[in-house]
Image 1 (tube, rainbow, N blue to C red):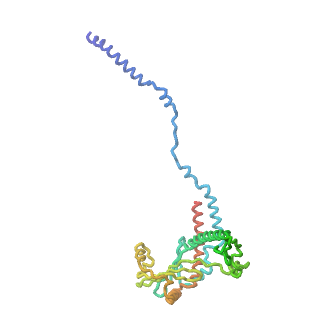
Image 2 (image 1 turned 45 degrees about the horizontal axis):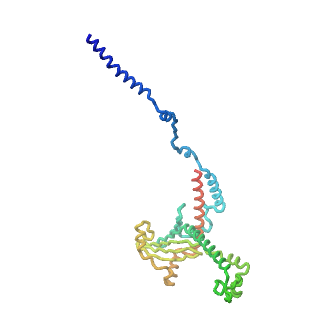
Length: 327
């Protein structure tokens, strides 16, 4: 009986806890959501694909590649029609066959070296096609300056003239001020040049084609155990023009292939300007070079070879760029 009572007493105590637990579980299973939470959950989630360059990687060529390659091809064919860059011209080939100098020319490089032996001496002459680039830059700036001078002259022609005006001859100042002077009256007829007649300018231009472009030469003469002479010169108009003669106690200082040697060589006395030397001394040094083949024949050949090499390098450059664009 006591056990039944205990059970009867325990049932009312357990029912409230059981009902509360059931309610709690039911609330947890079916939670009530607000309107904002429900709308937020129902909103679709936007998704974006990760950035990829796979499409661009599949593109083999750009829009201009074919057009650029075609233009390079046409330029290449044009240059080949003008001159065969692989065939040495007759004058260049003839000089190399009869000259004691050996040609050292690396394709793709700008520098060219001629080498020979003269007794116990080793002689090298170095020049470069880079001088053509410098010449083109100088011509471009020269044309700009010439155009500026013409504009200045035109402005001076338009202004009123007088006794103090530039270009006027045999003109005086009047009481009223400056006189307007016609261009043809600025110079007296007796003072005018004879070559102002029609056709004189054309004749002069045909007779004088203009000076050839100068090319820098670096001539090095070495003697074993005796050091070296280095001559700075230019080949121009069929002449070798000497500018400076330097002496180095060690031959390796003349070439100065390392920064240390270059620093040592830069601190040595390089000699006076060639034009400041005694006239007889200048003549003897020129004859000294002439005996070693550094003469008029060489001065005429070097510009021809520079022109040939520059053309050949340009053709190779067109071919290389075309191949790169088409790859």
